Amino acid sequence: MGTRRHTPEQVIRKLREGEKLIGQGQGLAEVCKQLEISEPTWHRWVAQYGGMKADDAKRLKELERENARLKKIVADQLLDIDMLKELGPGKLVSPDRKRRAVVVLQQRFRVSERRACRVVGQHRSMQRRPARTVPDAEQMLRARLRQISARHPRWGWRKAHVIAAREGLVVNRKRTHRLWVEEGLKRPQRTRKKQRCGPARHQRMRAQRPDQMWALDFQVDVTVDGRQVRFLNIIDEFTREALATRPARSFNADATVAVLDGLVASLGRRPEHIRMDNGPELTAFALADWCRFTGVDPAFIDPGSPWQNGVCESFNGRFRDELLVCEQFNTLLEVQVLAEDWRIEYNTYRPHGSLDGLTPEAFRTQWINNHEDSYSCWA
Image (cartoon, rainbow, N blue to C red; front, top):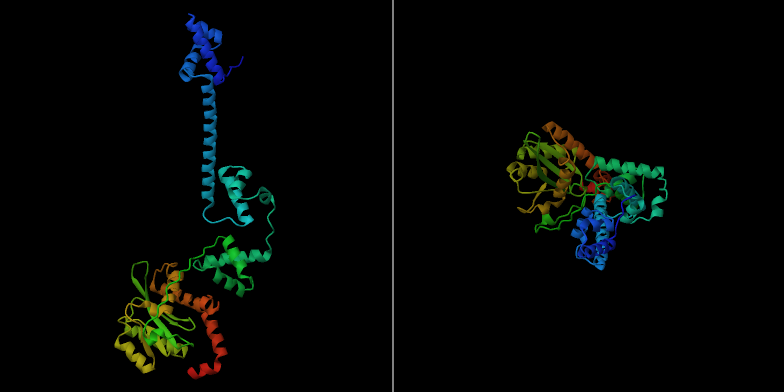
């Protein structure tokens, strides 16, 4: 015969009956025999339910059930929180993303589809609906966006859209942005700085045509052995063209003049003005003589006012963000090769936001073709 299980009410009734029999003078062994329980069970019942009434036992049973229910609710909530943390930040908007999230939760937490759908906010009918077939054109576009992001990790979806549109893969910007987000590609945050203007005429001067204003600045990095590398960056403020990103261990005024002479000789043109700061290499007599002999007007910014050379400072930020931070240089020769390759890519391949998505070289060619007569007079 199997062991009989007593409810709390039955236990209290038997305890009350047993206490009456003991009060009449019967022994504990005889009482337990009449109650059909053992003596250890009697002592256990007395320790657990002694002094309680049937209503108290019923209330205790209800409290135990309520406590178990609350524990289950808390456990379910904690599990839901863990599952939401597993999904990471961001909203799950599209059904495809929710569908993938449900599958991930089922695999990692061993929960049912119903439970995972409730956490994600996906209807079960939508979860079981077959995913749409991705067209070949969209697959090609997705693959191309992944390639662009891997090759240029600091580019956002806008530059990727220009490249994909240039290759005939996409036309709609919203589509590129949607696929870029769905692929989980990196989107660097854009920071807008307050625009300030200097008091002098050169600081307020804005280039209106190519070669009207060149900007010059130095930038510093190091090789793996800890030795310094200085970059002389020279750009055309109007076309945003990077004319030089020349690295060297050090730059003095003579070396700076040599780079400028080489640019004028190779390009066959010279600037009307050259914007620069007040560094010792740039205020030396060698550079002042070069400006006087070539007929270039030096435009010095105010001391401690780098925003007055904002176009070149912006270029320095792109140069550091897309090359210097991403590459590790072993020798000066390696720096020279990589810097020159990046400069050529910047001028001929990388779309520029301020030029309506054109490259600096394409923008210069387009502007000269549209203003051929007037540019020939200035040149």
